[in-house]
Amino acid sequence: MEDRAFDALVVDLRGADLPRVWSLLVTVFGDLAQDGAAIPAAVLGQIVAPIGVRPEAMRVALHRLKKDGWIDSQRSGRTSLYRLSAQGRAQTVAASPRIYASEPPAREAWLVLTDPAAPQPGAESDLWLTPHMRLSSGSPAGAEAFATRLDPDAPLPGWMTARVCDAGVVALSADLETRLFRLQDRLPADLTATQAAILRVLIVHGWRRIVLKTPQLPDHVFPAAWQGPACRARVATLLERLPRHSPEALSLAA
Amino acid sequence: MEDRAFDALVVDLRGADLPRVWSLLVTVFGDLAQDGAAIPAAVLGQIVAPIGVRPEAMRVALHRLKKDGWIDSQRSGRTSLYRLSAQGRAQTVAASPRIYASEPPAREAWLVLTDPAAPQPGAESDLWLTPHMRLSSGSPAGAEAFATRLDPDAPLPGWMTARVCDAGVVALSADLETRLFRLQDRLPADLTATQAAILRVLIVHGWRRIVLKTPQLPDHVFPAAWQGPACRARVATLLERLPRHSPEALSLAA
Image (cartoon, rainbow over all chains, first blue to last red; front, side):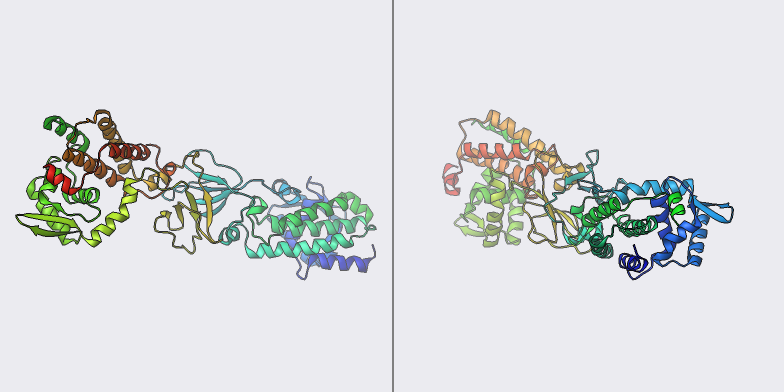
């Protein structure tokens, strides 16, 4: 695709604000090299520069990620190679199913109440409404909790859904949905491997910022304005239409 | 029925402890003269003396009830007549349906949750588990409360049922159930009008002390050991077998 037309696509998908560079790079490593493959600095630059990241900002972010133990680096002739560290890879692999899922994270939601006089710890994935009231994707064991499966057709009151997902994240979901809709509408057939990689990174990054802030509960417990299901579906459709290339392939394509 | 055999029945039904005399008299007025009919002091004595109330204790209790505005008194020749005051009658009539009901006070129980950040007042008959969690016999109006009908076949956890009815009242219900069972088993056919009135008073009083301490919720939200349904059924059966006589009839029978 011709550069100027592609830049317009990128700006529309990215939005007005530049994402945090280190976070964007986490997405790049996660989408391109989750298996621990090495990415040459030049390939990273080819992906993030069109998104608006200056070379100096990329270097600073890579330094930070290395210092945090998320990536390792290695010299190779005149260039540097970067790959996920064991720790960075473990965390990437852990988050991956949530980011790339085409299905909602849970089918059922349960309201679980425990003795207010003796708060009980629940699963980490539970969403706590108060120290003794939580939403869970499953029914707890034991007789000391009251649990009722929530009817998907009965809307929850606003004070509950607001705790499931705050208004800021709901607004992000509506914004991303609009951008993904426009991209789906205009997606050209003549993308280079690097262009496909850039779009993949922006799509995954936009959704990742949203989905990792939400509890693993079915969509029916979210606020009415939540656009998660539409985002999830569009992300899946778009990623299917945008082939993933290996860092080596991108390196050769450059 | 012969006095000594009757006394044994009375002691077994009453239990080891003498009820509070003023409270027992409230039951007598409620069962015998809810319509505001006058009861001569002699008739009151004939009913409460066999239960173990001394004449002086009866006089003190009548004085207290009069001072509290529950009853009025009136001289009539050489005796005194007592009747419920307008206020005493209003409260007696209000409590009566609960005491004499042969059906549970509610068929359904709902768990209702309101915003912990903004506690909402509910119906007075609701049972509050916390300032934002209550059990109600109906579904609340409005979208700001979460409400779910409780499944009668799914037992509630102990910390919930203990708030519906505390262990002391549950124990009273089991104790009364046993006494009522024995009375039902032995109830003679040859009772005098006064003997029938005494048994009615003890039955109603025993149940009244329990039922007025419980919320108007269906039995399935009560602790497993709650004997309310059995008590309610035995009270209804026994009262049907023990005819109610007017104060005049009792006065003539004496």
